[in-house]
Amino acid sequence: MRTVTGDQLGDFAAIYEADVELVSVSRPQWQTCEALSKRLIDTRQVPTLRWVQAANDADGADNVLPPTVEADVRSALVGEIAAASEVLSELVGCDQVGVRLETLSAPMCPRFHVDYVPCRMLITLSGKGTEWIPNSDVDWEVFENLQTAAPPLKGNAEVQHLTTGNWSLLKGGAWNAQFHGVVHRSPHGDGERLLLSLDPIL
Figure 1: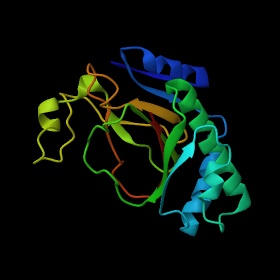
Figure 2: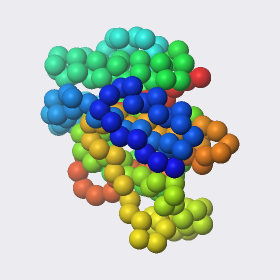
Figure 3: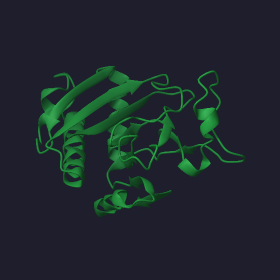
């Protein structure tokens, strides 16, 4: 299995290649989004928000974000979520998208795991990116041992990190019967992060 990185939204089409497990695309406005996201973290206005919106709803997030969120921060978030939802819809043909936006000061999912969904888009808006292990580097015996918290790595393999600001699409355990799903977890270490995740509702 391999990873595809790029800077064009069209690069996401590679997710349908049988040997691709993850596509990560850099975004030109990521530094602006990161600065605005840090402001949102500081205000403690978004601990956890979960909702479902139409994939083509340009203002879906605007109806969910607290009214106290500053106008420029709100506009950036609403736009980011709408654009990512549209891309996900075009890729997998979904009419609705499940959205989760949350500020995290500790690992939400401290153990390496696989999400049993067809796919999931993860966008770290601020802070450390999600940790993950390429399928070829996973020691599945260690992975299945619930008595250990050790990273399930083969030999000298290393844990990878998704790049902050990138839109990263991960195949899940329900993608097909031939693939286990991308093994990942919340990053360990100090610091707060603002994480956006989107799931297609099929």
